[in-house]
Length: 115
Image (cartoon, rainbow, N blue to C red; front, side, top):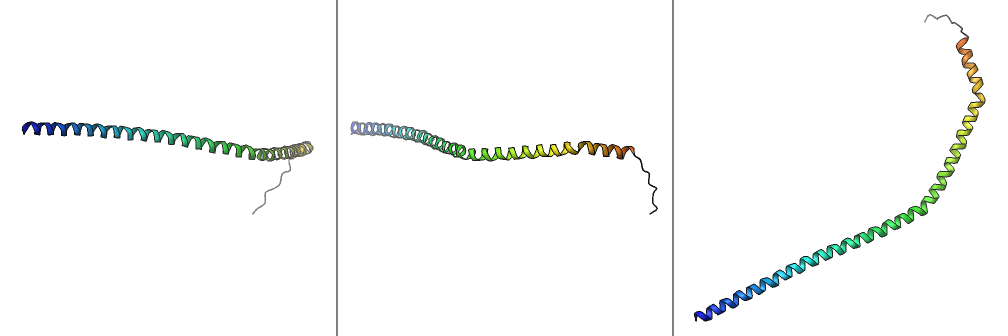
């Protein structure tokens, strides 16, 4: 009976050891699968990000051409206005300088008024 009990105990220990190995393999497989899923998700996220970035660049390039044209037109108009203002300033420049010098050199004293 003792040998039979010993044999049964040994069989149970072997079964427990085998079960432990199976559980360990299952854990390793699950860990490996989680890593693979995470890596796969990262790849999908990167591909999606790249796709959206490409779409944005395409949209930006399509609409930037219109903005560039409007910007160039606005710059041309501003340059024309600046040139016009400078031209008008140069036309009256001599007269303004002469009047300023006249006002500085011709002194006209005015008596103070009692208030």
